[in-house]
Length: 316
Image: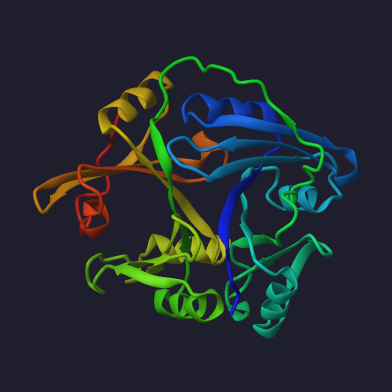
């Protein structure tokens, strides 16, 4: 079994490092900690601490050559930024490579002895979410060997009040197939699911990732007009969105208003008498990643809600 010690980071690729960094440091409140410019690896980058948590990091990468692996990836998306990979530490890189090969997973990029990159989804369904795995002994897997500390800076305007990355959501044709695969491959454990008929157009479940407080959600289409099926047809079994918890719903709404950041898909309700809310921010506003924000009055009530309120209610 592929053993994961911990999730190291979530990485996005952008053609505009400074502009995206301003967004993340401003409304999202991420704190930049290190930067690097590595001509040999054809990459510039910034590493951020995600507020409210320990050990969760967000990484921005900008390719400096169109022929590098990141440059080719960005070019294939016609220059559109987006989520590139999930970074994780494994206790034994050679053993991890063996498990990838045993399950028929192709390594798409690597620095031998330091890190490897592969989709962890079942191969017959096409390329899914990329994971970049590194062994112990080195923190570098981003071309950041010579990263330097970034002076602390203050941001103008209110931030969302993010408490951490709750989960990454992957769209997939069959939620049970992917949950079973991740369980056998890497020990992911199902911790929650909606009933089959809870939503007319989708079914979902949530998996705990060993070694991480971040979870993995799987959504699959139901019915004949499912947005999930349209997404998979267009993008494959890729990451659909990233979800952040916020500390104060009204404060997060005011921050969106102050930064002229529209939201959609607002839903709210109560579970066991405790309130919860969530809404989405379009990828055009976040650097190519669909973002979900949620707040809950008591821990766990949002995940246990059925979330069946109308999907067309605007937040602001």
